[in-house]
Amino acid sequence: MSEVIRLKNVKKHYSMSDFVVKALDGVDLIINQGEFTSIIGPSGSGKSTIMNIIGCLDVLSSGEYYLVGENVAKLSERKLSDVRNKKIGFVFKSYNLLSNMTALENVMLAGKYARISTKECKEKAIESLQQVGLEDRMYHKPNELSGGQQQRVAFARALFSSPQLLLADEPTGNLDSKTSKEILNLLTELNNKGMTIVLVTHDLDIASYSKRRIEMLDGLIVRDILRGDE
Ligand SMILES: Nc1ncnc2c1ncn2[C@@H]1O[C@H](COP(=O)(O)OP(=O)(O)OP(=O)(O)O)[C@@H](O)[C@H]1O
Ligand SMILES: [Mg+2]
Image 1 (cartoon, rainbow, N blue to C red):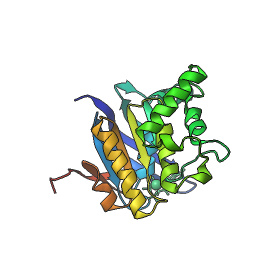
Image 2: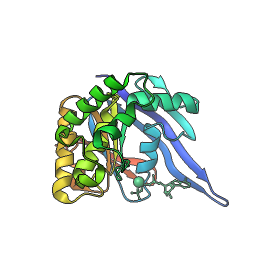
Image 3: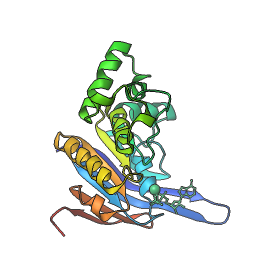
Image 4: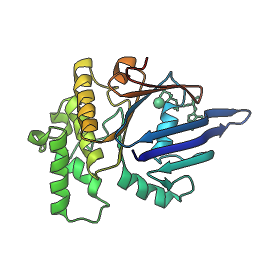
């Protein structure tokens, strides 16, 4: 199985005026292609920090990070943003959609910097909306969609570039439990089709949708278990 993520002794320290916050304090982690992993832990344990590092949104203080075999710890900001655009899809708690644009236009924004024609961009966006089961709502604006549907548009946008890795930081944080289930079923479906997924959550029930659960505490991974091995 091929490796998507390899972190070696990764640290992220923030120097404050009179002390140092050790947001990550020596993390080793390998995630292979096709895995569905959740990261769980209390507030402040380092979940978003590790996600931001995995997602190349932030740089490490020390250690090594290989993304699909590429050493990204030493890349310039420009190269990092290139890696981000091509290899990684992001979904957050807030949907971050533009309110004056339709679902389709919102997804097409993901192709803005790809050197493709508008026609191809539209085709790819429609394909992504089909993947999340929202093709019948593509001309709706965000305020004409439910919360779950808006989050699906955000997933479609994340899938636009056919990323090798999908990162979701509390993607159901703004949704009721029924809609959360739908989104988690969508994640399961995408994973069944081969997508590598890392999901951050506070909630053990949500984490139970993933095949592997990583527990964090004080900037460290304290448990790493496969479903069924508990
Ligand atoms: N820019 C920053 N400067 C200083 N400290 C920071 C910074 N960002 C995060 N931290 C600290 O690093 C630690 C980890 O933060 P992080 O956001 O990763 O936690 P989290 O597990 O995502 O928490 P939550 O569940 O509340 O989202 C916290 O103690 C936080 O205060
Ligand atoms: Mg967080």
